[in-house]
Length: 450
Image 1: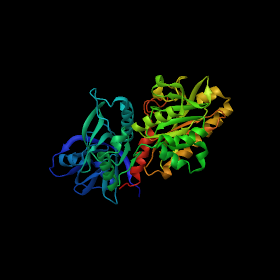
Image 2: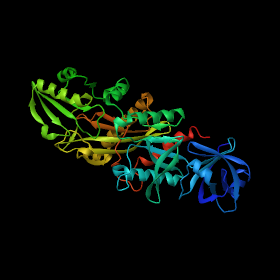
Image 3: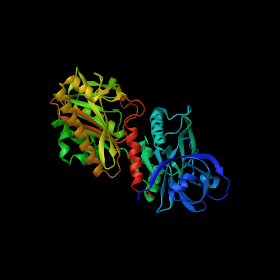
Image 4: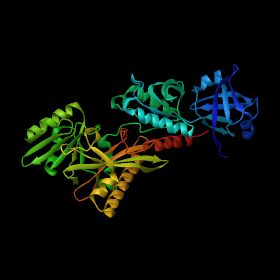
């Protein structure tokens, strides 16, 4: 029989026993077939304790705890009803569902999480509405199945010990820290305890290309090779008139270089430093530029696509996709209309953001616009399914950048496992990514429920 889930109020008052005890309202005891004096396993996140049941002569569905039980379980003081679930076969009472976002960001002096603050608050608000408990944590703060967490309480961020969550969503923004010892040890602990974490790493562009280039959708991917040394670009320079040099682990359109062949010379354009653009350079100068770039970080070189333009402005599309149990769905789609002086269409580089379908219907007749939108959507879904099926990391969220060429053929430009949360279109209460992320985390916990 499937355990019954309902919401309960956790009273702030503590039972006076020194031993572990849980007080349960009389009506709930009768409903679950429990009796005063018997023991029950109380579970919160990945901490559990055997507690003696006491009957509470109060109306409704209410619980309270002895101090020892509450402290051991690391239960915060809930100001909202939380989900409870009693599994009779395991004699286990589960308090709330504990979910966590792991990040390298700490609270700033203004007691916010900076640009991510609004997103984190929306995540917490939706979690509370569902009766779950969401907190923010850093990987180095974990020990003994508990962790130092930050959660929103009465509108303010509050630091407190929390039980180790049942599922984690990775939003670490530093590749260096993600490859560091603290995060490696943290993910090892999670793996040992069977705790899922999704989007566990940034995606390297050459790894994504290596996976998708062996699939049927390879014809929608620009030719790409890793740029191990300057000379490795020579075959591409001979084959393609336009090339893009991109950091392997780049983001937000930074440090991208565009090379355009002009007879025996090349023009060079920079996304981050447009003042360094040059109209005519020799092959030797191109190779020197590449050597200089590769000294700082790893690069790939990618075939340049002649993109469809709107009044001289290049545009592309960002499809935001989320895992819905074992399949994927599109949560939002936007078009990014780039500045005429920019070689990329990233918001961080001044692009204008509008709804994808709105842009398409402004450029094409309604029937063709919807057909093109459907082609873009299906290509994004196919890429997500293929990548998640072969990538070693568990993926639950992807930002997929697509574009149309002058023949209106769709192309996959880039796939990102840490899509920006600064803007996701118009929304009233929750941005499009909030609900699917929380629901996927909950799904991951349900796969190993008590």
